Image 1 (tube, protein in one colour):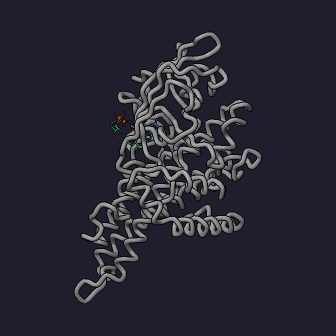
Image 2 (cartoon, helix red, strand yellow):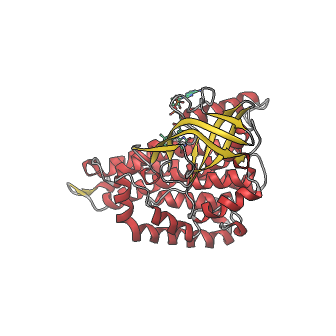
Image 3 (spheres, rainbow, N blue to C red):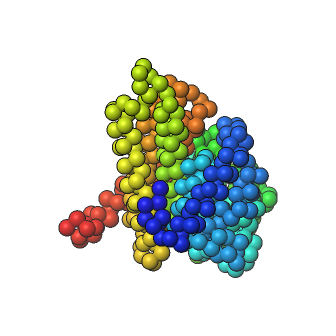
Length: 382
Ligand SMILES: Cc1cc2nc3c(=O)[nH]c(=O)nc-3n(C[C@H](O)[C@H](O)[C@H](O)COP(=O)(O)OP(=O)(O)OC[C@H]3O[C@@H](n4cnc5c(N)ncnc54)[C@H](O)[C@@H]3O)c2cc1C
């Protein structure tokens, strides 16, 4: 659903082609994707194929191997990935933003092209057992040793942590939070795959670094500038998360509608019941509202405006819409949806994860409240 983005005639043709190609990809690989998801396996081959088709580097200029698109293209690809249950490129997109915003030419040469084409798998090591929503309790350390750094710490919940070639590791240096691009072949790194309930195509892992030596050239951004590097990336990637949530909601509702519109109950089919029709109307409306907010943020980004409030609003609305669509799908399919290994359950679990990863609903609400309270005009209310 691209209520605003789809009205641009030039972009419309690209959207139509992308929608078609990603739908065909999903159809061609449905069985492999479902098997990998339920077995908690990262399908690197399929990920590579998405990269070769150009869908892993939407924000990267063509000279660096990417699509050369903007936030609008990133949003469309993310939504279609959710819509067809494909391997999420969110982590790769975040890596690209980090490198584009903060990377040196040498770092870009080494990592950016491969991440954009899917040949190099990226992960981000930020969260720890006692440091999730807040960085205050972060324990990982970065200690200078001659011209090098020694990195140590235990990270948890890391998507692709056990499958990646490079990770972005956040740690505390004397000057404050600092991040480093760590080649996963360096000695002193251990990973352990974990089993999250959702987004298992990009499975999670615990990642432990024990005195891992990296050169200063591996540092991304300024020493002590970790918060800046984090915020510059997450303001945009929040929109990818929102789009994937919208896509997941669409997938659940569309599959359920296909089923329910031929499911006979007594003398009717399920979609004849007015109570059911209202549920469908409410879920569609929520998805449309979230899509409008997401499109608005993408258009504002292209105009060069600050989009932090817009992307946060879009993610909050997308979480609610995906939840509502998934709930409506269960009303439409009844008991047949209430099993493991149905798309409805896979989607429900993916939504639960996206509600927390990349900034939880509560953190979105905190941010919006802060902005509304701080602004003398209360962000348009006054
Ligand atoms: C499947 C999965 C994949 C993930 N992938 C990655 C990854 O690749 N890399 C990475 O670094 N991290 C990753 N994360 C971690 C994710 O970013 C954190 O889980 C998230 O930031 C929340 O931290 P927490 O789970 O420690 O919750 P906590 O910070 O302990 O919070 C607990 C609850 O309190 C709420 N809360 C916290 N602060 C406030 C507040 N001020 N006001 C109101 N409510 C509040 C939270 O929303 C949450 O519901 C992933 C998590 C999951 C589950």
